[in-house]
Image (cartoon, rainbow over all chains, first blue to last red; front, side, top):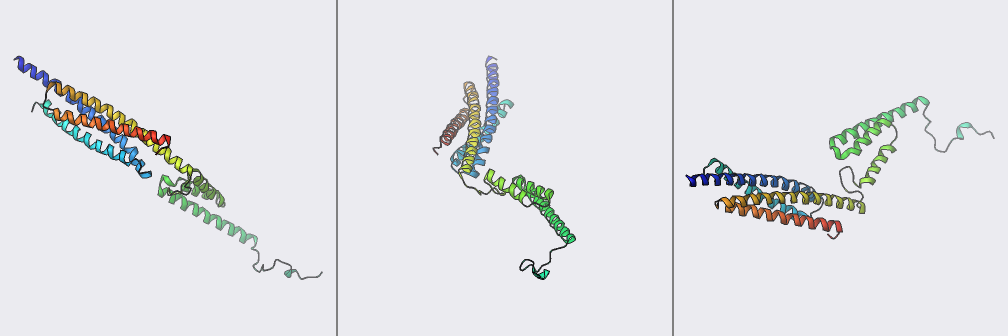
Length: 82
Length: 174
């Protein structure tokens, strides 16, 4: 029974950590969106900083992908499917 | 001398001066028309939105004065002198002042972007640390940890880039 207990504990900790990761990614997503907004406004005035805007857009895509995947696995872990 | 009175007027003044009643009517007709113009200006300005604030103001002032052309024109010129922009935002006074204003906007935008990007980096760091905790428990999600770490590094790079751009704008190098 010890093994079962340990697995469950491990699962619990993993779920908690995944949840923390989901939270961090969500906050990061919001932050990057807020960072993109002024640069988009800036894009109307000058195109000097468009590379930074593209960089942030790429970052947004990356964060979203990670966030979706982490969220998916968090749901799976917390339901005990995996 | 015994000159006839009708020949002593200004040369070419063949149109008789309007009588008192006619002058009164002309003045008030012009005032009425000016009021209409003011209302039209104001309505047009409201239709254009907040960008045309001075147009609305000029219309209202025109309506209220009902006579003076110079006041709204003066307000419009004042607006142009203050902002360097016409009512549609086009640059009417492309001078150092406008460039400086743009520069200030650029710096503000970059500051906001850099600050929020750094906050995002910090949050991604927390997410990456959480993924480290996940990795300590199980190796099932190693690919996820890599993805989060990559996002973290990318965000840090973007933050550095924004800081560098901000510094350059402040120094006037770029």
